Image 1 (cartoon, one colour):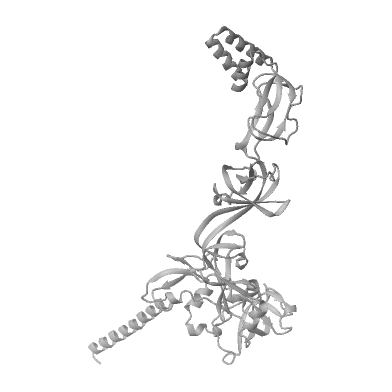
Image 2 (cartoon, rainbow, N blue to C red; image 1 turned 90 degrees about the horizontal axis):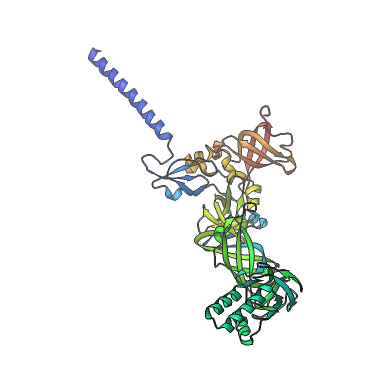
Length: 505
């Protein structure tokens, strides 16, 4: 073979090897992408356990799991989630009830307690403007009702007696300026126009000055007796019209934004539990109490028959602001944990799956869901905890989060045919390895943190299994084990054989 031929062969060989190498590199690059993503645009990223949780960039879900990309053209499958199928007979035995998430208006009712006080706008205090002595009391007992202008008491006041004499002398002298000055002095000392005119007509001074009720109402307090010495500024009596009363109440600072002036209020009293009084919020105080962290409210109620008495305690319900276009569910349907909140969705035909949600405000037996749920979706309202904890395929629910970084991504990356569990006839028994995390020998149950099981498309996860009687009674948490499990007719797996494979941790 000549040199030219040899060079040609070498060149062809090098090109072929380079081609295979380049092909391998391209295949390697393609293999690390999600199936079907080659050449496709990433539309958004979703949480593996909640397709409603969407972001525009990679990151973590509220559960701490890696977000999964959704490619252009794959939107219809973005909501595919692992689900749990339960035999209809079991569903019936568990007493599973469902309802639909509702969309509409939501009003919060705030319940609190308060106490009745007189309406401050309908009160008055009786004082005197000069010193003197109470000679006669016409009203002596708190609680008595008076009308405007009724006599309250008579008092002797030297300054008033002298001022009357000066007024009469000015009238006799015919000096208009002196008379006007004396008249103004009598007014300053507390006499009314009617009393001054009576003195002018009579022509003689009154030794005792009458003090009359400035308004109609009830005598709330009386601080003097007959013969008592009084001086300017002293409150002698307090009157109040109780046909309208105030109720002083408090709400917590996180409830205060829901309450506004004019909001409807309903009041109940212990002596009449079946009766309701309707009122409104008259004033919301602008500060928060430093100690109680509460905001004070003032409510107003009509009291035409006088049944509502000051210092009574009352149970109060306040109508908060109404929010429009929100999604609400029964409070009993919400599963709360230390790190997340979720509901169990009923997919029909005995299939269930979890959905992580973000709850908002609550009122009565309903709670607002701000994200994670759509209107009209069917949710489980009873036995959801049993579905979550007692079903044989525990990991079909939120326990898939045990392998935060890889399990859900691995399931997304598998071919659909690979993810399907084979039937009992096709694969009656499957083997695996793992570590014991909990043992319940009396219930013939064991919880394993098992390794991936490629035969049935399971990623690594922690889940509970039923076991053959006595199979796990000698095992302890921390033991590394090898096990064989068999698929049962209802679709669940039972461990038929399990043995220790290494030293416990």
